[in-house]
Image 1 (cartoon, rainbow, N blue to C red):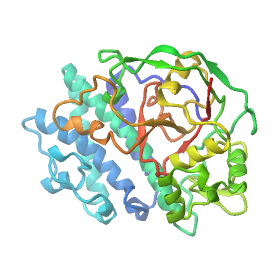
Image 2: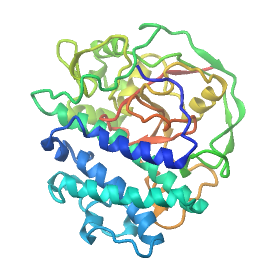
Image 3: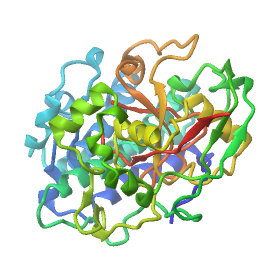
Length: 401
């Protein structure tokens, strides 16, 4: 069972660096060599590429510009492992990352260890604040890719009729403690409230979480738990996937084109595919791997709605022990992903990290059972396109007050 409260980032950056970098390599330990190049769909990336790209980040934004005598890898590697940073140079097509059998894994690991030695020496000598901030950003970036590596691997394994097992003790979302059908709710008065992070506040945050600003919220209520498998199955059995009146037009088109009839990893006879392989579906576990369109349709069927991301954040300010807020599933909100008032992306290529994706995406809040410890907080803004289903996402219901 995973924690359902945010955990603090380790105060010593050098210790955090060693923990994060070691965790990435530990994630591939259960895999066979053939698994490292799996890319089940264009939106996903192979495990080997995730290891290389996170190293590319430190190479490109720290060592090359700030260490004049640094000897990096062959130049083509920087093209292969750039993701989407246009101002950092060209990059290899994302849908073809599974073709990159070379450089070999041992060469990539050697490169990671050379980068580790250089950065740990730098940290031991007390780098300037700007450098420390970049290293911290790189570590949080790597933690994001640790979660991506596992969710991408789950997608790839799910396409294999052998139902491969990543690990029998792989993480899983905790089951609800109150059982299905619970409809008591937390009430919030709303009013004029402050959301987001102060630009100069202590503790790490991504640029899209700031600046702090005031908003007006009308009263609302929030479910004390995430929607369960049993509750979502009732929607399915009530022809939820066949009723166009429950769906946004774009979502209904997806249902028809993709032939959706259940959450992404549900299987017949009450089974569900997971990193532990094919498992009996727990009726009390939160429903997961659903799109925003499915979450929205379910909420409408249930006579409710999705909370806005600001309602979610204020709810956690006022109810810090809200069940299943963290470490369970990312929770879809009804908020399009956009900039906060006064938002300015950082200058240079780092400014491409978040800002250029502020269109055609919906915000998710909280964190999932795949999120690394220390990587969750109340102000965190995750985002995906509304049709995405391979990330560990579920839903919590809201009602007007």
